Image 1 (cartoon, rainbow over the protein chains, first blue to last red):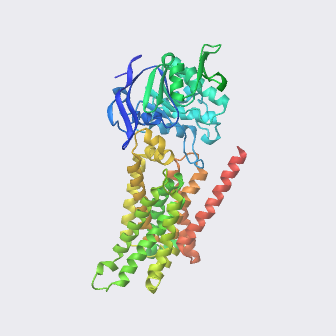
Image 2 (cartoon, rainbow over the protein chains, first blue to last red):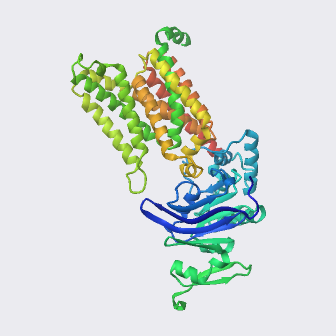
Image 3 (tube, rainbow over the protein chains, first blue to last red):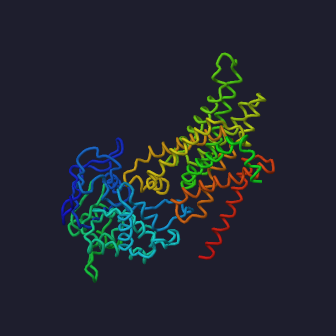
Length: 258
Length: 286
């Protein structure tokens, strides 16, 4: 089975998630289609990571349904880029070994492994650094190696949890532009989890806003409006377009607030 | 020197074979310990098994010999060593989560309780105190045929398990958050690896004492860490370092009439110093 263009790959219906008695998300309904670029947005502690964990099979729904396309199987075709990589920094490892760790749970032979590695490293622009010491890479290059580790699974859905955390402006811009290109050129479905509204306004095709157990989701232009943002963030905002046509969200100074 | 070693084979072959097998087993397990930065846990688990042995000796001395004969059996001492080291490994694997005590604090507690308790329990038993001092100072002389079979089986099972699931083991050791995200169940993994560490250390302590056990657990893996460019080859280099160094240690100890366990650990320390220098030179050149 293959995921077709614009086919639904994740669908939630009345999904409720929580930990024990504590409900975090209630009645969540949305669907992600192949080739879309989603951003899960919202203040900390509103359930973004909880939904992500459910999609990765780490927690079970308390009610409702979370449907994942059969092609994504037992999550073999879901790539995940975690917020932090907690590898013991005194351990020796190369870019090659680090990226190949992403193949856990996937049956490959040596040939396939080599092809996947070459493809993933090429995609992230680390093609010539395969044998390089992972710890000698810059922050931006390490982030690319993390993405390559997820890409080596040839994912139908690539989930990125705060992928630009801790990067300087230049590295952040480079990583985001590369991911946007991956979405545009390769039709790679992306799902970012972030609280950075500015990058969502610039790169998202779809947005899910998390607030008080609710999720407001849909195409960027429908969700990213003044009323919704003011309700969720509790501050007055203005939305404008910059020279390249991308949306820019700014918080109004106190004197201009109603 | 080599001839003397060969001549001593008839008398000490069990000792040499068990020394090599323990080196192999602990070096393999030790790569995981070092990769997860749990060296202090290795020390605490080793110390906990001496507490188990002390308790077994204490129970033996407090009860009449003919009433409960099994309390004095060697198997009972080994079983207590294994039970306590497994318990310590499981206990130190917990903690570190939000709102709970840190790994270091739990590990420190296990180490200190075991170190003080082991001596206190046997302090009024001259035989028990001697046994604990012997375990702490390490002696691999006196290994039996049964030890050879036991450690051979453990080495084979460990090597096969690592070969069959090396990538999962690596990911679990290196990046547990990612391991969970790709569907690995971390709790059973932590349980099995901790229990295996406890089993390997508990049995090794009983046969080779604390110094040799702890030395073989961490030193070969640390040497491998400093000379390898990746974690995967550490699973080959560490056992080679352990067996190679133990061989040289046994030959030298036999020639100079020194204790083989201490000789091997001293050589491993020397090798680690050299490995540190090599790493420093390599980095300087880069």
